[in-house]
Image (cartoon, rainbow, N blue to C red; front, side, top):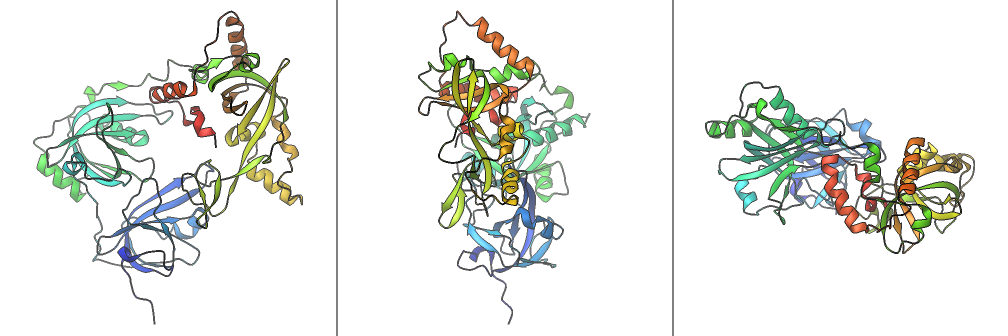
Length: 473
């Protein structure tokens, strides 16, 4: 006897053999920091209950051809785990993880709506009736454009505007990155005056805090933006209701900010809010300080943990077994650890020396191979000692670098944020040493440097690698 169809609402981790009738209402790809791609999808059943599912990277090729937004399926056999996403696409307590025995059969299920959106009205948002860690669908009409900041080179674009719906409540909306570009391109390509109604699927809501107003925005993955598409029922309904009340916004009236990054060179950003000081001066520091210095990488310092650590497949944090699962501190679950570089190197400048900790991405740039490649080469050579330092690591030694790092007095070492190995950058740093010889140094604390870098990051489009705490386990 075949297993019966069960409700999405009833899914829990008491078993893996769930069998459900569902429609795929949303599907997207997520690329991890290790450059692996997995699929995430939202499934809805005839009772309009939803659950999020994941297709792990090693199974993408098996299932990607079978899955499509709007299609309906009979699905069965999953691994079930807690819905522990930082930002959840559903309120269901669990999520489904595809495994090798997951069965997917495309089936016509007319009882499940094709275009189902979990719309949260702006009145509810304004009243605080939302969960900040749950993504929702929002439909709104644009009433005013506040800021347009476009930088297509490094995906730091921002589009800020006010929106309303049938409640006549007005809320601020901010689109970032490609979504800001999509919105800007729509305006730019419509020479005539237009009014805008859009739907933002998987939107994030951020409550008012300090001087920042209540705001809705895109999430960094899983969001979908639909603009003025009257074939969408929700957009047509709001457009018909508000058409006469929404202002027409001409593309020629946009005040576009496009010059924020051009006024700063790459080197300017490299030394921004850092003390440019020599190793001799670093030796006298008493507090955490962001600094830029020069050092020649002399030798590896042997510690307690070898040359790599077991990292998360989704981020750069370390992993450990928690509740029977391999998790990092951000609660990402990995099927197996990913080796990531952590190398302590002695840096020398004249007669002065300091210890530097280089992290995964910078080591990869200097060595030319990932830690996983390096480990696999050891295994293929018959070496299974995890404390064996591969000879290939020596590729990063004997190089003179300009290094941006955080001095950590507690450990008496510098945690590397980034580096430059070109002659021009090294010369500029050395010239700064000379120009500052008679100027007393006032160390910049890590906390103030972080705040300044954070405030700088949007207009200057500084990458996340500039935040030293993102590089410290």
